View 1 (cartoon, rainbow, N blue to C red):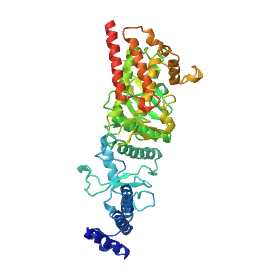
View 2: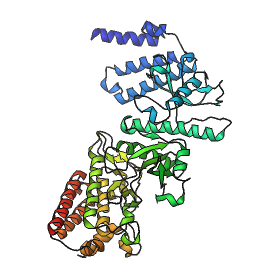
View 3: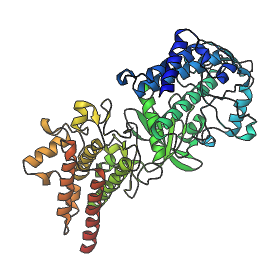
View 4: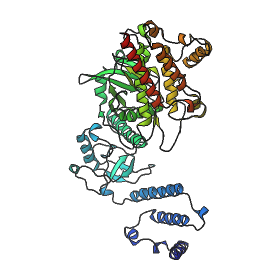
Length: 520
């Protein structure tokens, strides 16, 4: 204890007398000096002294220590490389690739990566005032004007790339990348490719620690050809932020999702890529096959489920593509969708809130098998947290009251949304209908008013009634309606967890099948 106290006094005295070098490890001194290094060491020592203050309340909290050390480290890295230290050994890569995080063969051809490395080794790095990075001026025929770079890490690359272990891997900083070439079209594709690749890796690391299932990379030309240049006649469905087209790739039908231009759509697109890639293991989500990163906003390619949504099929005979949706298929759709959402809530360390339930996001095939699509609004709840806060997003008539009022929500938001979808399945009616009385324009209010007036039977879709009765059917419908009402409870704590909703819907569906079979 005495020795520690004397060391503290000695360190303070050295700093006071401007003799800090006396206490610094000779190894640090021997590696040489560069602009800013002395200030970093002084800041480091000063922070150490604050941490060992005798009075507890004079010591900084650990989160502040962490922040200050991060600043010292970043400042040191930037100043060292701005001084030109060891730049001859630096390599650049023109795409965001870490072989331990993402499968490069699904993002761009291996030969292209090797070609990029070959070009980059001929670049001459020079200091620049570009915020957050360094300016690279090309001496090669690629004729890049400048590229904003950020050091990420030292990575081990495949041995056939002929790189030494010490070589630095530079990754493109996605926020400020820009370049100029003689061929604008090619540049736009390459710029978008790099920017989108950077954003994709950033989201992968943030949302799922860099882990995802492999997806393919498609070119813009491939997708234009697949959709006949996005022929309006191939349009499957549309939303405020995107259009979904039917296409063919290698003779296989696919769904091609093209987002509108805009900052919101850009964020939604990457949400969709990252979350959808995680869900390919579950049969009740539309599988993401790949994406095109060459456009300003990536274009996504999904498996082709069909050209019908739940919204289409609930219109029954109004839509020639759809057979009437009877009670047993409806109960199965509800059960499958509940299983899917329960998976989101329970299968990951960070529960995922889907936040985008509406009939047009539930796709149906010819056998009325349902798959959930569109992760545009999805968000993860951090470990140790019970809620997350975000701007209000969603469809009118589906959003839970606590979310509208406070902006805070958790998995129970999905339970509320799902309860409204159950009412849609039960009634066959739309979420919003101006033909209903003024106070019942929204389906939720319409059902609540019907219950108050003891006329719930009038809410049930006429298609369900027209198919006839069998023993147990009325009880199933009542249980279904009661579950929907519990899901849309005003207080989130009164709503059942999604796993319980899933179990109850499974019982209802099995009962419907059993009773129907007994009737013959």
